[in-house]
Length: 287
Image (cartoon, rainbow, N blue to C red; front, side):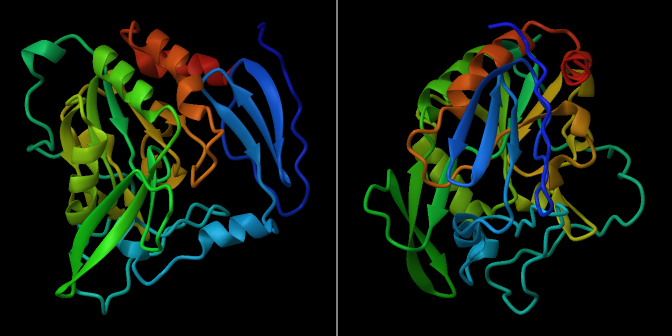
């Protein structure tokens, strides 16, 4: 499957979501056109799409999972200030340039088992799973979470091929879960999702930098050489400090025919062999 150059012409009200690499197929899903590539996806998404509006509609518990996401400008609204139980105090606001690396890093020293491996930072919500407070008939997990003294059931759907993807990532990389969601929700979900001990560490909202209204995952604070770090995330706002280290993934909600994670495995197999993943990702974007 040779690489091909596919011109993408976007109509008014649409945006190009991702970088491209070795185009292998074009698929039509409703009013959205998806160009799937070997590891990367380009998606021209109609902002008038009613199904997208459905996905954007969030309950009052939305800040509990992760930050609000506006896919037009990648601006993320902070959680409501009057909801003290759900929202942790945000990290210090960073209004200028990306903050400098701290003297104390978020991650411990690399273990002997992971010595020499590249590090992959993996998002949770809409990347590996989709969660809702509304009952889902085919939920893979139901996680009880206490909010304001009441226990609520969180219904969690696993993205197709997530088990195979995580097992492969655990073989190839030092894997870290990094989510903008709160630990009281994300930690038990990770317990159920990661049956193989893939995640060497878990980072939650308090480890993010609150930058211009966004919860940003600052890779420089993790204590790993940036040339050996990859982040996979569905929200560009999450990695605005280090876009050159990102492998974007299409947001997932409930499409059980989705193959995004499966399609990413060959790319990550190649990245696991690179001494400088930054340079490889840059070269792919320049093709």
